[in-house]
Length: 423
Length: 124
Image (cartoon, rainbow over all chains, first blue to last red; front, side, top):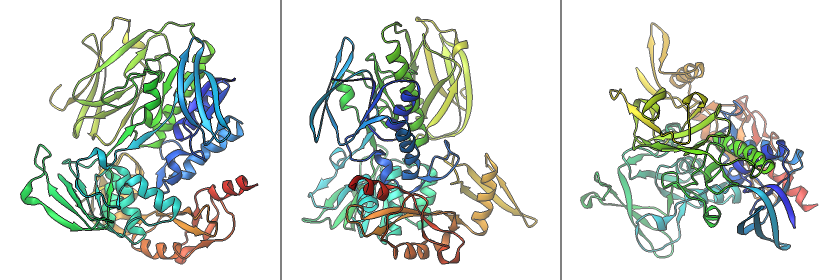
């Protein structure tokens, strides 16, 4: 049997950072990755802008992740590539994992698990589009794989549905390679992607963005020949009189990302309906003792810098947990949020573990010119901070010392964003 | 007066820029880079671009590249044309130059991944 302190599942930016920090903390670590190479999705994210927060440099995805791969190798951390985890069980001593790779089926034991499984794109099946099933309907990530890794062009004349960041990035990428991008259609009245991507990927190339619009139908037998678009009303229902047919050979979908938690659910980890990732405490431990979550599996980030940060923190926490397993009792308080927040991570504070440096990630529900984030303990305000330009697509990070909050097991914590005028 | 969104970092500040007595005045920025960006945007907009170049290795048909520093926005498609003429015949990796001083813009086109080197190692 192969025994480890910490097994990390996933070799993208979150998993690499988790493995490195767990190793730094002295743990015996194994990283399991299903693909042939480490790096996760960053392998195909060749655009620049990664690492501004962490390194103060604008790097491409491969450059960013190769810095972590280099450290991972220098530390001689064990990894098992082209290996797929098929089963996980909790035992009295930790966990037993079963995984398949080219040399057969293997079992591994670990005291702690870090789930760094990233996220998946929503596909055509998850959005309501009528019509035939021709070739030429693909997600932005798939298009990115074709162009940036395989060197193949999946489109000549395309329409993009959804204004997620990868869709915007691909609008520019396909334009640079000579394709014609007829427009980006977003069902919501505001864009889903970062404002800077609207500017540098669409405006720079005069690609039109149609807000409150959607694709309602696809046409074509073998290959896509056209799509039907329509404006939507306030309930996001297509307005029939605005229907228009647009000839194109490709429809690219950038309609959202969902944290990948199939493994977590097998272990009985409870998911947050808002983030679609596990409910966890500020040490990134899920409700199943010894199971940690980080990166895009925990919640969908817009910057890789924060993916690495959560990976690092969860790796350290997992190593510490493995070291003193079972010696401390869990004492946690939940953070209650109202409708002003789209979500808040972590969802709980672990009272018996360092509250002096807690990192919160949150998104506002609405676009706010000015808003104040407020923490209340048993109805009393213990912290507030003003923010300018809060936007749902732009995640905020906050580092807080919570030791002065006077928390006990019976405390109730509420977190809200108050609009200007509410206070 | 013109309103711009700064693209230097993810903060994406909303900038206002206007020319007063021959001097550019910028507001709305949270850091100095915003001022430089706004003035450049009004006078000579600069961008970085990333792309891929072909290789002669079928298992790694393309490798990623980018410009080593910003180039004038209006030269993006000219630089793309140069990038698309490159074919990498030798193993190379992150930081290696594939086009030196592209179109005399004082900027190189550099490789941004070690994927070819990795692949070569795997063959041994």
